[in-house]
Length: 194
Image 1 (cartoon, rainbow, N blue to C red):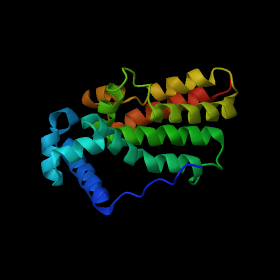
Image 2: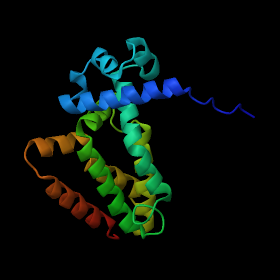
Image 3: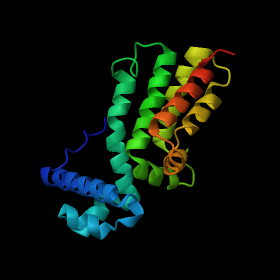
Image 4: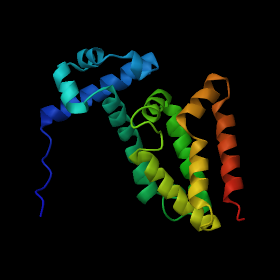
């Protein structure tokens, strides 16, 4: 039996929270994580630069930690939260709620999500978060309209809320409510049984 995970020291937890708060504030103020140096974050958090690198590795590690923080509640709501996002609602209502929640997340955290989806292993699809949403949406589509093409259609619906598309639309003047209406219309059309 593996040993229980070690509890994080109180000072380490405080440092982690200070770094995340400073990074979120600075990234938000500058509109792009690439414009913020690790030195700036360390100074704002009141920690040494070494602490920052040991804990998060690099700027992308900080972005991942911030996105993880933002998605934890969404994950919990999808798995065990109240309907329509959580169990208990019909699959089509849950799929609509999930895509709306993902769109809201992407709109609220545009610079972070764009940085995360643009970095890493060369593909915005090659990360745990994408795989989680894809699996959930595939299951909902399968339940709502049958198994045929469900995995592909889940990819297609998730493409409608990709950060690069959201960034393109918003920077070219498309209001958030128009984006939301388009995602909803696309989802409803996809949910219809063949």
